[in-house]
Image (cartoon, rainbow, N blue to C red; front, side):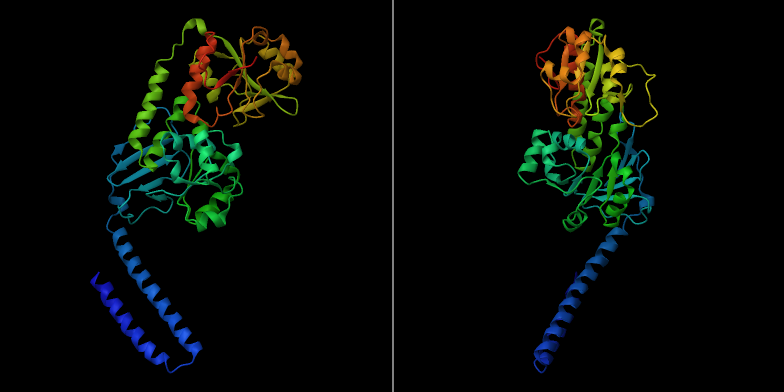
Length: 405
């Protein structure tokens, strides 16, 4: 501080000398001298601040940090968190490790070049992963999101939609075409992507060139619905809501453990939708929807021998193949999150007349999904609760399934 004051006194003396001299010069030179002075003043203080910051940064060595505390992660599988006082390291499978620096702690020296560094607080998030918005809503941290990769008309979570309508969260382009200029000018401090960014690696590189840290969350790859919910712990760490995240997850796990999966409820379930091209889109056996069906006590209508060569969680079937596989399914669930909700049996028959021969159609056990199903990530257990209910012929208080009449 003393050095800064001495530096300021020297600059003020210089200003007095230059002012006296400028009286003898014409207008143009007076303006030039003042501009030079202001530039010197700016860089003088910038240099002082930079020096102080460098000293603070060098006071802690990364190599000397001992990350001995581990955040328990039981189901997610794709990430781990290790901590020490003031610092955390997140390892996401296949991604660069992430160093999280707590507020008021110095940036360590010697951080490996391949680390992503996040310095708290994170106040201006560019959230591209639409399914991650639910974590922000449940943790009451939507105010930390500045930009979205989804337009408000494609957002079905009420709290998020309201933030967008109020202008608190603005659209900054989808994952493949972000508004780089706006993101940079507004000082975006983190971009949270999903695995779609792997189709456009140059976008990720450009964001990193602009000093916008990028992390890629991979809950989509987790088949266990509880594993998807457990990602809330990562967001709790990033946004200082660790206890809330832990409590939330524990409550969902308790709800799952209390599900009444009686042996008599076991039914065969077909989950599907009719595409505009005339094929039938179904979930592949083993993805998180079909896993939820199994964990709720049901049986998915397709066996594990289905095509699994693609990394996609869905596949298209010919109508005749779907007829053979799903005709005897006890329960039919139409995925209305893709092409809109259908609540009338006749509308489904217009798409696929042979549906009238299906067991589930004849018995009136026909449902469609609520449009928020895939965005409300933390609702996986609630979806299983709905499955248990419909398998036991109880249709009251459903949250994610709607009876088609």
